Amino acid sequence: MLEIGIVMGTSNTAIYMPGDGIVLFEPTAISFSGDSATGRVKAVGKDASEMRGRVPERTSVVFPIKDGIIIDKRACQLMLKTFLNKLFRLNAVKKVKAVVGVPIGITIEQRKAFEDVCFEAGITECILVENIILSAIGIDLPVHSHRGCFVINIGGGMTEIAAISLSGIVSGVGINVGGDMLDASISDKVLGITNLKCGITTIKKLKDNLSSLYSNDISEDIISGIDISTGAPSSTYVTANEITETILPYYLRVADAASIVIKGLKPELCAEMTADGIHVVGGSSKVAGLDKLISSRLNIPVSVYPNGIYANIVGCGKLLSSPLLMKDLLMQK
Ligand SMILES: Nc1ncnc2c1ncn2[C@@H]1O[C@H](COP(=O)(O)OP(=O)(O)O)[C@@H](O)[C@H]1O
Ligand SMILES: [Mg+2]
Image (cartoon, rainbow, N blue to C red):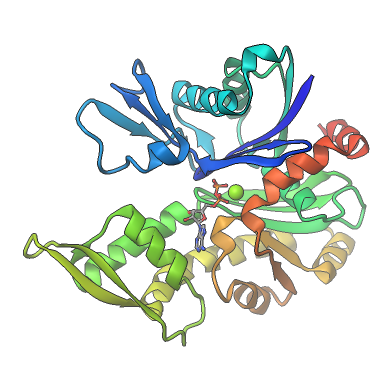
């Protein structure tokens, strides 16, 4: 039996194989010749994602997960199957057991969609575990202890927040704040102040280079796009301050949602967890000043993990190599 870990996030899909580590980390994307309901698979992952905005007629690029949820089962299943086939010949291994990350607080139908996709992609046994628990395991937090831990994962389509103790979620929430929303709002802001309409790759690059929550950041970046008043290509500067103004309200929503979860905890747990601090992971936690923003607002120490984008997939790997923890987790279900 082959054991693997799979995390299909709104932005990125990752696969872990014991012994090899993270063997795949690519955009959650697939392209078809034709439409996604009947079309033939053209490309998956990075190759498919790069086609966005530049596809010929009769080719479609699909991002099968939105806000953490599978919105196109056929596309998602074909994407996963193609990824798995790149790694090993599915029909050569008889059984594949997978730990699969799922968002916090989803419905039974939405969980079943993750299972269906995995089974249809050739997985024979599927253990669904909340991404936020996997994230905590990935950064070596003591999820099994009674003292517990408090974790935030800010991803592409959503932010997941949870207090975890005795291998289960004591209290938690998923909110629709993530990188996709930041991209859209940065794009609107750039259009508003410079008249430039920019492609998603340009916006993401700008976000990666300039994202900061410090209001006195003086850096700037040059961007290119189409000037909507003339229709001609043009370039201009955007400052870090302009990006900060745009993204700050979203990160404040994350801090406020965490505050609500913390205030709902029982007093001892609240005191213990907050003494140990808040641990922040996920691709969209890579923004300068995030630790200061949350810790000053909540008055609790905050650690942001530089490799936090991999926390949940690393957690899958650690779970696969820890039968005791796996037993503990399964008992909580
Ligand atoms: N250096 C960075 N600065 C800001 N945002 C980033 C950076 N690197 C990645 N991101 C954002 O992180 C998000 C992807 O994070 P990830 O945790 O993989 O999401 P998901 O788990 O939802 O697929 C994207 O929106 C991406 O633009
Ligand atoms: Mg993630």
